[in-house]
Image (cartoon, rainbow, N blue to C red; front, side):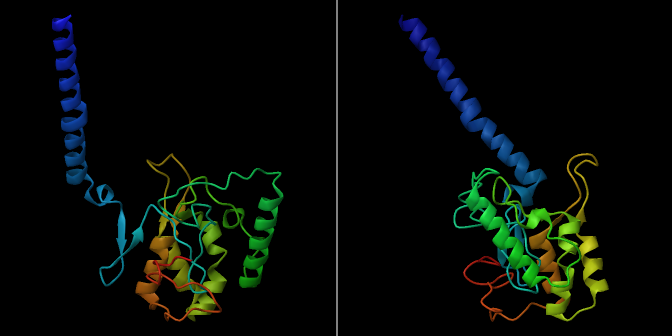
Length: 214
């Protein structure tokens, strides 16, 4: 019995050291060496070097001069510590009312946008933190953004096109645009908008209380 216990204890210690110490250290070291930015959370900095978010986590932009992303049901909205969906089904009256209200708001804020409101702008992702939109959903917002910033549409479209990410490995997923990275590029190229809120809207990138967040 004692020999069996000693053998089991040795196996437990060896397994603990291998899987609980050596393996995590090796993986962490490899990540730090090969993918340092990703290992630190894909943090995004503004032109002053301040961390304003993560390229993996969406933020809520409501000011006219910034591109908006998908709605979020994560915590109070865009909460990286409370990733979740609303869990409301297609027959939910609450979901229908929320989508209808968002669609009406978007039509009101984007009177010059072509065609109907893109479905992405009124439907939340399962995580509530998806930072990407399709290029089409971003282009739909261009008239509002250029009007608010007073720049030529061609310049904004060119910047947008330069931020389109292709399919992963050429075959996985669809072309997409990271809204936070695009808005930061807008500030760098055309100037950061005033910190004063517009019509009760939230601040833009780097605003208070959190960068670009409602």
